[in-house]
Every structure is written in structure tokens, then in C-alpha cells.
Image (cartoon, rainbow, N blue to C red; front, side):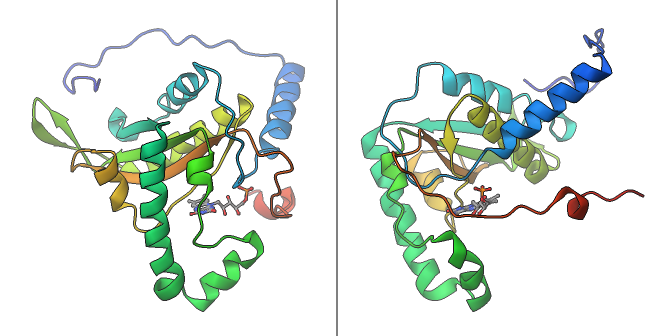
Length: 224
Ligand SMILES: Cc1cc2nc3c(=O)[nH]c(=O)nc-3n(C[C@H](O)[C@H](O)[C@H](O)COP(=O)(O)O)c2cc1C
């Protein structure tokens, strides 16, 4: 729930300072853990243990948001019929994208990833999490402004991808373009826009991922 905007209400912050060695060890352990995350496009159909997705979504929904509007909905899709409907609609959009919309430069950039208009992972993965961004809020049926919704939902999705990886699941950040069909298939209200479609599960046996190189620290971190 959004806080009422008038009177601020404060509570004591629970915060435990850690010893420097503990901080260093935790920072290194987390860095190593998250560097093992990869986008997976080949999934096993094995089910996800119960409660895991709920915990990950709860983690995502703890993200900061502009004016604490929490402008997000996470829809978990496990029904075979809905996954099929999403795959068919996504592939129809992607066929147009790959045939008519993609620029030569974009096609070149996607080349090393081996992606195309075929999206079998949308049916193979045991769950799809579709994240919706609330372009505005609703309070007592009235429209209220939201702030920095792109940034807020982007951060929440980052939390979600981390939580899924940390829980031992693989995921893909998928953005079929355009994504309006998700609002229709999942019957979301007009003020919610699909932000990203995340297949989740275990990687398929012998799953392959593109051999990518990440920029080294000295290239991405500067001192000023
Ligand atoms: C905003 C965003 C949109 C993406 N959209 C797609 C997509 O539609 N299809 C896809 O296969 N991968 C998509 N990706 C995944 C990227 O291709 C992937 O993150 C990148 O190649 C790096 O690989 P890694 O995630 O394994 O490190 C997307 C990633 C981001 C952050």
C-alpha cells in the first residue's frame, strides 16, 4: 500500500554494522555468485519447488521506487495453455520484427547470441514471470501519478533476476517487441504495461549459452 502523503511516520532503522573482513568476504562471495548468472534460452520442464518464486518476487517487490509508488505487478504463468498463447503471440511479433523492423546494425549485434524468431523456451520453461509497469496508480478508483516508473521497475527486475539466480534458478530477460499482447492474454488493466517477460526454471541438460566476455573492472569503474 502507498503511504498517505501528509504526515511522515518514522521508525527506527534496523542496521547491523559488519566487521571489515566480513564485509569484504560477503562482497566477494556475492560478486562471485552473481557473475555466474547467465541468460538461459533452453529450459528443462522440471517444476520449481513451491514457495521459491513467491520469495523471489517478494524480494523484487522490496525494491526502491519513485515516491514509494511500487508501480509493479508480477504475473506468474504456469498454465500450459497460457504459455502456448504467449509463445504464439510472441513468435508472431518476432517474425515481423526479424523480417521488417530489425536494422542491419541490430541484426549484427544479435548475431553472436544466436537468437531468432523462434521462442520454444516460452513453453518449455515451467514458469514465466511477466512484470507489468503501472504508468499511473489508482487510489479509490482515482488516477494518481507515479514517478520514475521505468527506473523503479528496472531496479525491481534487477532484484528479481538476482533473487532467482541466488535461489538456484535460471532465467531469461525477454522483451518481445511490442509486448501489448501480454496485457491482453493476461487480462491486465489499461494502466499496466508489460515491461519484461522472464522465463524461469532449470537449464536443460547440456544447455548452451553464448561465450560472452564481460568488460573488465578497470574499464567500467572510474575514480573521480
Ligand atoms: C533489457 C533487456 C532486454 C533483453 N531482451 C532479450 C530478448 O528479447 N531476447 C533474448 O534472447 N535476450 C534478451 N536479453 C538478454 C541479453 O541478450 C543478455 O543479457 C546479454 O546477451 C548478456 O548475456 P547474459 O545475460 O548471459 O550475461 C535482454 C536483456 C536485457 C537487459
